[in-house]
Length: 167
Image (cartoon, rainbow, N blue to C red; front, side, top):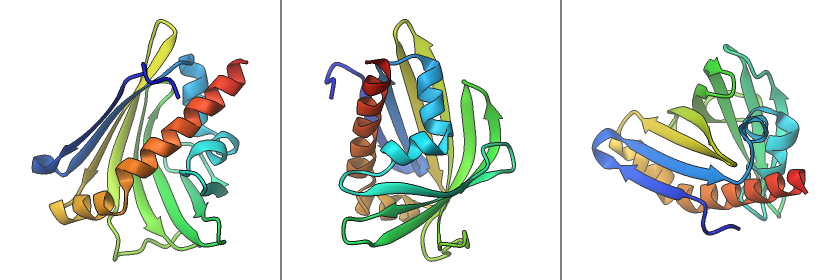
């Protein structure tokens, strides 16, 4: 949307990590809400033409978010985010997994630890997302699934949502 906003996507194969640094033209409060409220996540989390749909969300330490990514042909891919540590408007540490519709982890697909850090600077907010996988094969799996392309599209959806909120 706004090409002048920071977007770095780094693959750190030595440490099995993805590091994404993304700037948004919005206040910290709005960006934090977009990452932590189901009704907002459902509006941007999936890459178009897919849509995110929350089944349940309990945003607290020890809680989790269970959601589906729904495709244009009605197909569904389920995910679960288990919240470990939450520092309001500062950071979220969680475990993200591929699951079935009941939230049971699929051992065939990689789970990941992630930490999102939020930082407001002037009239923008930067989110640094560090996602760590257990082994190199897990990192390769998500890269081959289109993680960079899908996340980039989702973050562009978030740009649009944040712009609409400020209009």
